[in-house]
Amino acid sequence: MRIEGISTSLHRLPPASPWEDATNKVQSLEFIVVELVTNTGIVGTGLSYTVDIGGTAIRTLIDDYLSNLIIGMDPLDYERVWTKLAGQSRRLGLGVNSMAIAAIDVAVWDIIGKHHGMPLHRLVGGARSSIPSYISEINLSAGDTAGDLAARARDYVSRGFSSIKIKIGKPDLDEDIERIRVVKETLPPGGRLMVDLNQKWDTAQAIQAVAQLDPLGLAWIEEPMVHHDVRGHAELRRQASMPIALGESLHGKSQFLEYLRADAVDIVQADVAFVGGVTEWLKIAHLAETFGKPIAPHYMMELSLPLLCGVPNGFMLEDVVGGSLTELGLLEIPIATRDGVGIPSDRPGHGIVFDKTALAACSVDSAAVRSSFSGGSKR
Figure 1 (cartoon, rainbow, N blue to C red):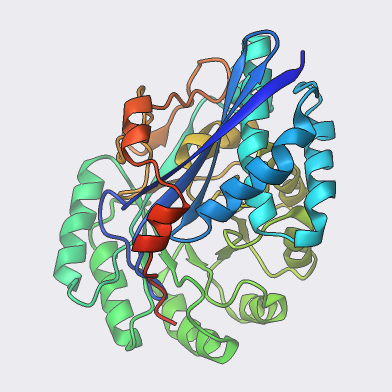
Figure 2: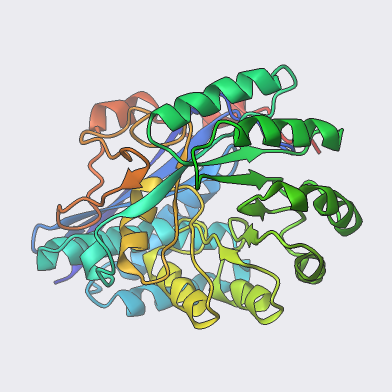
């Protein structure tokens, strides 16, 4: 089997509900979709994404540099394909190139699954048939009250979710504590509450704040500090009783290894799009297992679901409010959690089937992005 053609498209649209955290107010999500065509007639669909910025750069990197490298290669040789793409783009460091490689790599694995007639979760290990899911909130707007948050939490619980993640990072920590308390009151027995800082604090702030948050019984605190501060996270972990979760801002196994060696992380949150696709994600998951750490991926529910069901240390699936491909109206065949549980598709490949009309409606080019982008960073 050989790859005979590759096509890309870029799509930009706002989240289905407003996204705002401690460091950013999101204007749009960008999805880079890749199709690989083989000489056997099998077509693989790949996907990567960005939050607000970088989609045109990723698409251009694929079109102008990476696409010709894989023409004529056998997609069953996924390691050879991935290594060639990574080797040729290594001078870019890690980041945009990892996200570009991911779109191609996901398409390669879709082809492999279709070729063997196997769904992705079985192809990568078949460790389980379902995975617990938590609802993930992205609403830290100034006008959002603790009462508003509590009402939404009650709705999530009524829909079968016993685990909820909320954003914190208000100027006054007492406001954060109040938000935590009102949500905890809505949870059923055994329910979990997680909090996410989106890298808001420095080490001193984090240590002071966690001393007050520790008694609240949180299931984890996520990205309390900047993603490259390995020593700071290690120090925080030594002083905190609650688990530390991170990884959405890391782009490869070597970066995760730094955190694991430093004993600076409890929950590994590798994002399949950010780390370079399925091939690298699996290595990170197995690396985390070696260190006795569970994996709970960031975002990308539709791809994270089968991957979590494939590996033995899969922990929890993130179902982000307003961010799933189903909520965004981009899928022909919806993929959704039910009663707080994710069940992977049995269709060969990854099971993601895009609605081509919906994709076309939010298709953009560089000129369109250039004329509309204004940025949402609060820093």
